Figure (cartoon, rainbow, N blue to C red):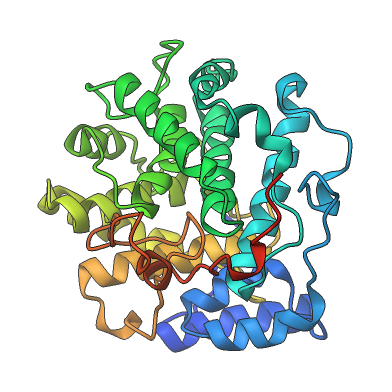
Length: 364
């Protein structure tokens, strides 16, 4: 940790954690509620306020093929290069997440996915074509593809999205590494990047309450990555991606499967105070302490970690009105425990996703 760094010593409880978010907003976006704050405000128990404030500023503008305008127009799924595809999928994730939070159904279904939606047998080949020499990067793409399948099915009303998800889960159940509980098709042996990738695929399992093949192995592998700082990125203090990835895996498996609870609690007792050091004195959370400025994504990550840890550790000062309704894959706490079957209509209420009433007649 940089010797000169001063963290936000005012964070003492849930109220002051909430205050650092409000101070960050006042400094960076006082007049408009940004989309990046939706998840943060929902976690803090302010979901309806988030919806009310964000709604006037957001309209899901699309091209006819279903891509949102922020993603660009010229894209072919089967010929996309890794970097352009990565950026496109992230923008799709942001836009779909905003639609879900705001209960908006966009005009056009995601027809650019039809190569896979119409022929689910190709899903496995597409997954295997990802650059698995970087299981972290591929894990992002892998999750976002499934998230789009889920959106196409559950929000746009296209049952072919369900068929594609069945193929997606089948590949992952067959290719998971039982020794780590993660995916590493190219056998890189890089457990840290495997973990950071697997968190993304786990989110899809948790979103639909599907059984994770090797939860205890995933816990053991994740615990092995904790650093002297108490967080999970090597040689830094720290990296929000590694920290939220590891904490999501540990907390969700803790609640869903109850394995290695003593070891997980001991790990989180170090995570909790270390994570609080990643809040800036002027408000908001940082990615890497002393290196990066606060931003909305880092703030959401740091607030989320604090809430997950507080629940398990029973840190009562931090047990404010957290909301863990799974509107977005990263907002999950109980590993999908108790979710209705994905074919049950009550699934929508459990995850607070919009129903496809306005999508009839859009299929081509």
